[in-house]
Image (cartoon, rainbow, N blue to C red):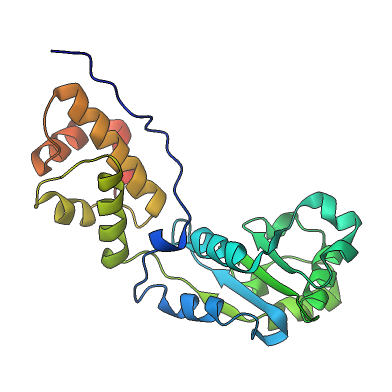
Length: 224
C-alpha cells in the first residue's frame, strides 16, 4: 500500500457568510444584525454561550460594513474611530470603562456603529463608572441560543465535506444525540473521527464512532 498523505487537521473555522447556518436559534440575531445602520443608538449587543455563532455573525457584519475591530492601542486615540463602525468581539471586559463609555456615545454619529459580543448580558458587566452603568443597562440586546439540531447537523456535514468524507447515514443522528451544543466541538469531533478512521483503516461510521468513544476516555468531555 502506498504512502497516504493526510491534510492538516488543525483547520480554523471559516467565518464566511455562505458558511453561516441560519435556524430558529439565531434567526432573530441575523435579522437584527442585518438591520444595521438602523440600530437604536447605533449599537447592538450579541449575547450567547460559547460556540453559538456570535463570532461568525459578527465577522460577517464586520466584513460587510468594513467595521474596525477594537484593539487596546486604540484607547489612546478614539477620534480615529469617530464615524466608523466598530466591533468589540468577545473581550469587552478588556475595554477600559472610560473608553467603552465613549465608544457607546460615538456609535450614534453618522457612519458609526458599535457591535459587541459577549456571553453575558450588559446589565451584568462590572463597572465602577455610574454613567457607564446606566448606558450598559440600556444597551439593545439580542440573544443567540445554543446551536440546535438544524445548525449542528449542517455544520457537521460541512466539516465532513471539507475532508471529502461521506459518513454513513446513521452516524449524524448518533452524533447529534451526544455532541455538545458547540460548533468548535463539532469540528473537533469530526477531525478526531477522521484521525481514528485513518489509523484503523476503516470508514467513518456509527460503529467506529461508538468504539472510538468507548476506547478513548479523553474524548468523553466532547459529549453531554
